[in-house]
Length: 311
Image 1 (spheres, rainbow, N blue to C red):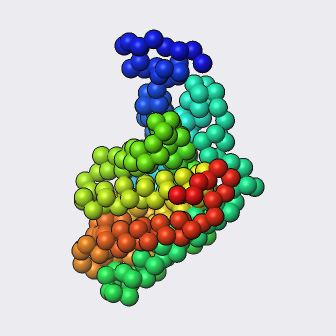
Image 2: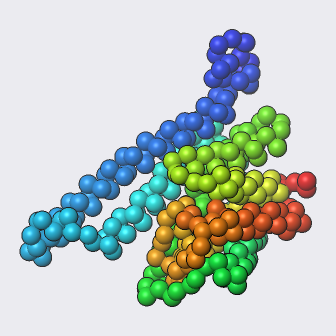
Image 3: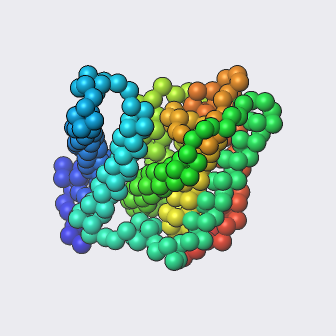
């Protein structure tokens, strides 16, 4: 590799002639935000145009454009979340392929044939952890549960697809790209802390959340990073995120990042406290703190696959 002389250029280029990791991570975020902004505006325009066309076809007064259409707006929100995931995924792939000239495998996205055990273990661990939290809250009368009159299959299918898209794109960025880039410092612990801090910042900077909620998001980031280090793959973090968020939002009816989805059951906090997390759901409570800490134990004893390391 080309050796770069010391000087101002080292702010952007390291001694091996490569763009510094921080700038590449920043480029991904900038591309993601730009793509998300463009896609949001485009989707909004198309949605409005489609709604106007629909009203004209059925002969409804154009004033009804401002009448709430819950199903339509839920569909728009669903589409925007999928577009957001695709924008992040595209930004990661662009920088990885064009700037780094590397493959997705280099940041831990192994073939599903070799990573299915990691994925299954992550799915199982996320499901067991979140279900245990729900049962404790329910049995201690911290939440009340009601069956929702919703389309069960549609709710589960759309929720699963949405959370799968989000998990793949976000884990490919936070754990796959960021941790791999930060590990060039030679300090794994530093890459874990930096990627987890970035993960927490993305979820909390634009939200009015409690310190405990932010701490739990940071702790979740460390757990996911530990899974990545342990297995050398993003499949276990992806699996954990899918089942964790899917059960939380689409089955048990807890808010996910402050958003309430169309769940099979609705779980309402009878009294906001440190156990149930109040408005932001169990992620803002101590039970999630305990569940995340305990989840380190089975990950620690999971047999490392491929590039995984025993630590």
